[in-house]
Image 1 (tube, protein in one colour):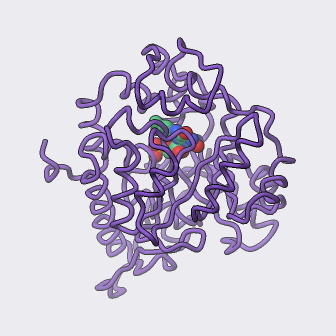
Image 2 (image 1 turned 90 degrees about the vertical axis):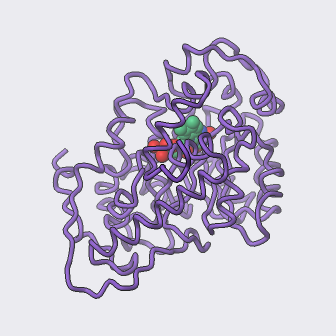
Length: 369
Ligand code: FNR
């Protein structure tokens, strides 16, 4: 269908399913084991209800924000999804270019199909970028990569902590890995590639399962970038992260691709907020709490923000947009979200993101879990 018939982010998924080669669809859409967590990521948002306020003069509404001190036109960032060229010849550059035009922040994946420098070179001079990091067994590689990213102006380091080993994504495993250009690029820096276990496993063997809290101190010594731990699920770990002196966490289950039957980031937000409240202010201006997983509507984002999230990450929504329509698809996704923010904030009675308070949602169905 032509792009102007796309009405919401779900539509991009439906188009991607049709246009993508089987292998790309399997890699992108798959989640681990019985795919229960990925389903819950969506379902959790449907258990939170709005409590809209009326008669507040909502002529002007503003949904812009700052994320880790960087301006963002949306309270949403593009979360890292690996191997963009499986789905479109320009890969991650579709995201970079669209994000630059619209003031949205992109998190560059360690396993991007395009090289890190290609992506940074495609960005506007003042465009903010974050980096997602998989930590290599060879720390000298990781150190060089992190320091290079800092030198090139990256504004936040998101260390993925929920993937000491990649989850079993059976849909992906059924389509065997065959090297092509996109993957060949990623493999350049890696050894021990196994070719018979699906795309995800084939490219992930360099990831260090020995990563531990001790390493966080080391990261703080090698970079001044804000450090965010991506993939936190419990108040216990949220408190350890705060105490470790990092600048934030992402409540994430990796889009349902890691530990199946782990809870959604949105559901965990309530417990984690309660835990963090025992150790300091909430929300804490010096400790960002992001949420990702299953976010496809501005209304989803508004629910997470009302419960105290600093901003929200979207992976597949933008990935499917560029697989289907390239850069123009990503621009359209931003436009759709902007329109949804405007309307939903008016209907909710919140003129800006500060006015989104916990009283604007009924999350009792989550707390009952
Ligand atoms: C991911 N995600 C991910 N996360 C990460 O830290 N490093 C990575 O390389 C990848 N790669 C990746 C590939 C694909 C195809 C997907 C779908 C996801 C997880 C991603 O950053 C984010 O946590 C989820 O995508 C959020 O869920 P939604 O928005 O996809 O539902």
